[in-house]
Amino acid sequence: MSYSSILFAEEAGVATITLNRPEKLNSFTATMHAELKHAVKRVGEGGTARCLLLTGAGRGFCAGQDLSDRVMGKDAAPPDLGHTLSTLYNPLVLSLRALEMPVVCAVNGVAAGAGANLALACDIVLAARSASFIQAFCKIGLMPDCGGTYFLPRLVGTARAMGLALLGDKLPAEQAADWGLIWKVVDDDKLAAESQALARHLATQPTKGLTLIRQALHQSAGNTIERQLAVEADLQRQAGRTADYREGVAAFMGKRPAKFTGS
Ligand code: LHQ
View 1 (tube, rainbow, N blue to C red):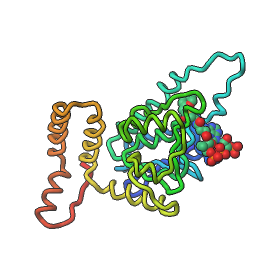
View 2: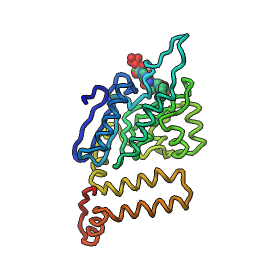
View 3: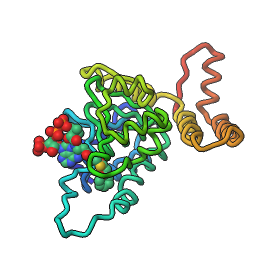
View 4: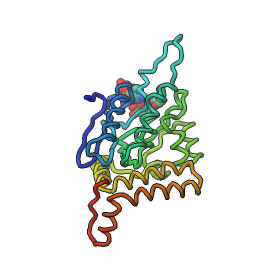
């Protein structure tokens, strides 16, 4: 499949997907959804990638749904947005969460609506100092989707989640980092290099172990302590069977750098 709305590159163990409709702030169209679905599947199913990096082209990261696709005539029947979510956005979020590798997001500019929540679905979010996050849904009569009502209260607590979702104010990147919504802020001109370096580092690490870490943290939100301890025992059992665990211990004992293969 050739892509028109995203860019795809794979190098040094990192698959990079760049949302690429800069003139419309990389807002989502049906084509972009189809291409993203294809690219994420391709990353998960083969190739050499051990980390996915998601970013945007131009001055925005993603402005959510392309609203020019959504203009309704006065007498037109209302659209079934639930269908749009069930068939496009929800599978996208779940496909990112199901990848067996870490997912880094480099938010290069404004992230609004579903674009903001797409970023929050990733494991480590870096943002350019000039970037911002906007839960824009309330301004057009909608509610946060693309996982927003799941991620926001878990990341920043209910009070801040409510404020963000009900007011739709622009949250500057630095405040997002201060609030724990994202991992860190980077100077604009360093974002591409720093996020690529982080992704390349992750791609050299024990990929199976990292996948188990993200699985455990994903499950933690809805679990009791008893259940989560059981999850840890189960996943650690799997970690203990990996070649990278064997290598990690051998390297530590041999006082040498470990060479992880991701297996
Ligand atoms: C856009 C968009 C956009 C089209 C900028 N669409 N063109 C899920 C289920 C189904 C349906 C509904 O939605 C959802 C989930 C959602 O994501 S709902 C939320 C949709 N997103 C928004 O409401 C955000 C709309 N955009 C904005 O509020 C602003 O553009 C922000 C604050 C993101 C950026 O503002 P500025 O920096 O001032 O840029 P701008 O507004 O001038 O935008 C630049 C261009 O991009 C402009 O086009 P033009 O041809 O005039 O230069 C905008 O029309 C276009 N654009 N967002 N979502």
